[in-house]
Every structure is written in structure tokens, then in C-alpha cells.
Length: 146
Image 1 (cartoon, rainbow, N blue to C red):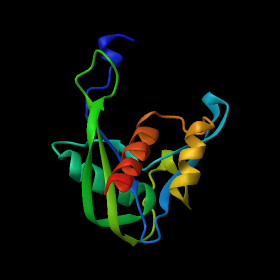
Image 2: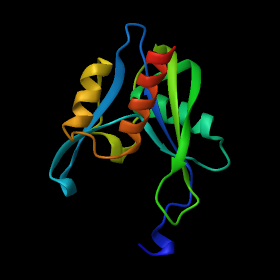
Image 3: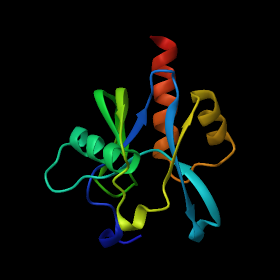
Image 4: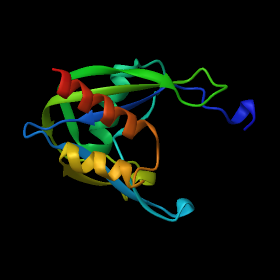
């Protein structure tokens, strides 16, 4: 990967936890990778928005969810060689509404899964990107230690 191809903008991934403990999981076909995969709401920062505002916008757009409470779970590098960071959040006290999908997101399907089922899907290799599984593990750990 050349420097021109490295991510240059920070991104956010969100574990949205509904009142019954279920988490928002998205699915979509990824033909390049040979099938349908799971992922959590998230995406790249736009303009000068903060990681928190990016998380709130992506959650609303991809899942139709607004959150009263947004808590940081930490951050990590997106890839070696880039200064871009992936910010992980847990969202609670949710209000549900319609998805606001962009044209390239029209296949995104929102589902509500138990944390146990979402973590099992991670173990089965059903998540395409690494940020979602990391956020799920951290959110689950926070729940256990709380």
C-alpha cells in the first residue's frame, strides 16, 4: 500500500445497545469478498467534525439511530503507516428512526442481535472489518466489569 492509498481521515465505529441489551448489526453484500458480511455502524470523519460527531452522524445515517449517551471505548490505528485513528464508541438511550442511506449503502440491512450472538458471529468470521469486533469485545467487557 502506497502512502497515497493509506487512510488519511479518522473514522468511528459504534456499538449501539438498545434497552433490552440487543446491539445494532448491519449486513450487506460484499461481492469482492465473496458474500454477505456483518459490520457495525461507522465511517470516516467529514470536514472538521470530531470523532463523536462522526459517530453520531454515521449512526443516524446507516442505522437510523440517535443516541442520548455516547461513551468512548478507546481508539486504535486504522492501518500501520497511517496516522488515521479508529474511534470506538458505545451508544445507549437510543431513539429509532429511518435510515438515511447513501446510494452506495442501499443494501445495508439493520438487525438487532444479542451481544452473545454478535460475538459468536465474530468467532465465525462473519464480520468483514476489524473495528466492529474490537468494539463489541470492548463494550462487552465494559458490561461485565460494570
